[in-house]
Amino acid sequence: MEPEGSTKSKRKRKRVELEVSPEEHEHEHADAAVDRISNLPDSILCHILSFLPTKEAVATSILSSSWKPLWTLVPALDLDTQLSVSQSQCLDSNNRTQSVSFFTHIVSRVLALNKAPVLRDFCLTCHSRCDPLHLETWILTAIARDVQQLQLDICLDGFIKDEFYSGELFVLPQSFFSCKTVVILELWNGIAVDPPSSFEFPSLKDLRLVHVFFRNGDCVQRLLSGCPVLQDLKLCSDSRSGLIRFDIRVPTLKYLCLQFLTFEPSLPDYKLAICAPALECFHFDGDLRHVVFLEKLANLVEAGVWIHPFICTREAWTKGYQIGYGDRVFRLLKALNKAKSLTLYPGKKQCVDFGSIYPSRFKNLVRLNFTLQKSNWHVLQALLRVSPNLEVLVIDKLYSRTNQLCSMEPFDGPGYVSSQLTTFRFNQYKGSKYEVEFVKYILKEARVLKTATISVCDTALKESVIEELSKFPRSSTTCLLTVEVQH
Amino acid sequence: MKFCAVKQYFDDENNNNITSGASTTMIPLPNVESHPLAILITYCKKHLKIKANNADNKKETEKEMEQYEQELLKKVMPQELTELILAANYLNFKEALDFFCRAVASAIQNKSIEFVRKFFGLESDFELGEEEKLREEFAWSFEGVDED
Image (cartoon, rainbow over all chains, first blue to last red; front, top):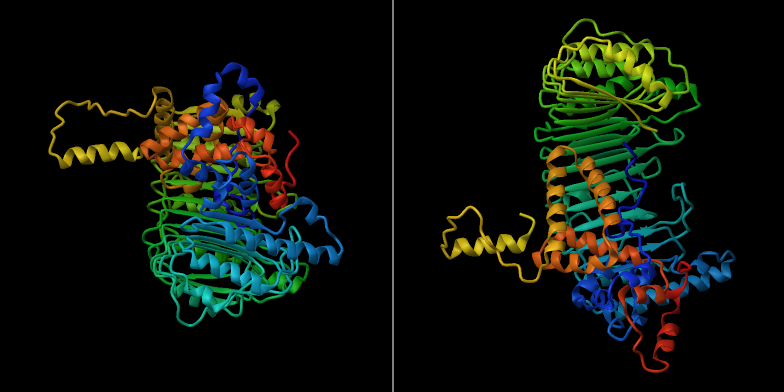
């Protein structure tokens, strides 16, 4: 499972590769076929242009006279301070000021010239010191034009790749919170979110807050309380965001994605209480501290948990963090026990001193994707034991460079494998002793197993693996064992 | 039903109380040619199949769909895209329409004006000097394109 917050979700720019060589095709097809593209109705041409950054859409105005006004009718604007390659190379402050005022001029012009009846999408990326007043004006203009999808990424002091923003913040104006039409809202980086005590986003269904800043933990719930129809929430936070104790209480929420990245121990633990009884899909990625679910997730269908605790050099902190680590992992898993599909990587750290293992059973679990390491082997065992209806089991083996002082206990008797298991897959198989034992156990115990696929990285290994594993007895007569090579 | 135009047809039929006793109903689609229609039907079926296979896993669905879409694009000629777009538009098949429009946008992204003209089969029909004026007015939008 990959960390989710790191790439922009710019839906409309999802890159779709097309191999084109016009010269070749012109010979093969009559001119009539080529001309038909330009005969597409204006509305469709505008739809095509809406998938391009505004800079490129504007450039199409010189294609021909019929194309000249098209970009002004596109109900989407996507503007970036890096409007020209040469500008982004301006290093001295004089040039930078000039290029910023140039950008200001361009955006104002574009906003004035665009006469689409409704501005459906507005996406603004500003990674330079632009006067916040201009930014406010543009945002409020978009709101006045009934914007439905709004994306803002603002770093007034510039943005450095792979580093978290720590410069001056842009504060959203209070009138921002009176937008009645926004359905999808995405805020990135150097933006301070401080909602008024009572406001409403009556249409907001999808909210993404990525590394933005809050004055305190209450701001989050204040923001969420103003979203009566919110269904999707994505919150990516790092240790600087100001979130220590906060709640997520959204009765309509169906999809929740959390990402927490912590660096050096600059802040104490965070404490998050979640109340989202309608939740169907839950994803967690990062550093797990105190996460509590206030209401049972009875509607949960899919869950993905990917834990990677930070590495700290200070011994005392590490000890304190590790105590209760296993406990936190198991408590989180317990809350997710209604899931039908679970993707889990409980992390490298050993889950020592966990509480009583799974008093609750994973009765609904049909599909389990587990990223296995020596240190979390017993978590897998415990999970398998309480999943009586599991049908699909996929193991991804992760190899760690550090030597982990933990032994992998073999299965003590039958009862770990569900009687419904039909599909088994083991990726990055190397043929180590316990891997062999594991596969042998599955083959022996899974009575209705249909396919068992072992994936090795090394072609040389394939033959020996086939030979070794084919010898093991299978309790399922219809089981097909395949060994494949995947790099 | 993904083909909203077809769904509309069935809804209208029901409203008019026309009994369709036969197991196959003929629906007239005058604006759609058979070749693009075949591709759209395959796309739709694949989409529904992937969704059903990964009923509980949104991410897997998206991943598989993207893989299929990449494969599909390798087989489609740029000129066919027009027909596909028109067909998807007529049938009111939103996912396919968005997909093929994105494909066209991708094809012309970061390309020079000459390239895009060739791609769309356009000729400049501006008055003398008009094009230069436009180039000046929007100079910032022409910077940073790929070499042809």
